[in-house]
Amino acid sequence: MRFTAKEDIDAPADYVFAAFSDFEAFEARAKPYAVAVTRQGSLAEGGLNWQAKFRFRGRARTLDLSLTDYSPPQRLSFEAISRSLSADFTITFTQLTETRTRVSLELELKPQALQARVFVQSLRLAKNRLTKRFRLRVLDFSQSVEAQWQQEQAA
Image 1: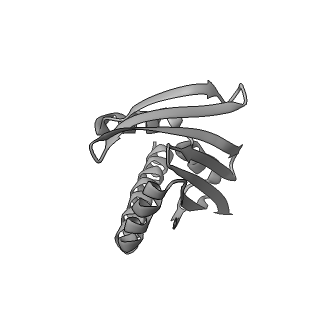
Image 2: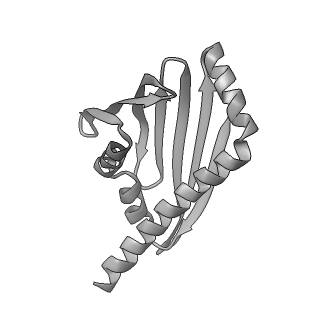
């Protein structure tokens, strides 16, 4: 199952890439949702991984997330693996002009077990609603990046 979104941001590609690769900020955003995130490795060492522990549908879950492609300012790719589900997440940055960047996000869920297949099938029934929520989250974050850029330029 695949989710996609595209947004144009009035900011240079380097700035947008930096905002989308601010891993500390994303780790901090997970805390209010009771997600315990542990980072392992670093970009300098050649590998960046996270382990997230959270509760979903009444059960404790663990998700291992790996940064698979870090190519500034063109692409970020991640692979997420849980016990019965895996996902690939890719963010592509295309510089349209010096101060305008298109961000394309793609999330693909891949069930690895029967239980996950049933879960993904139930998501297909609500795909329109989930796609809309995914795109709204991308839009909100894109607007915040654009507002930060404009604020920095005004200062």
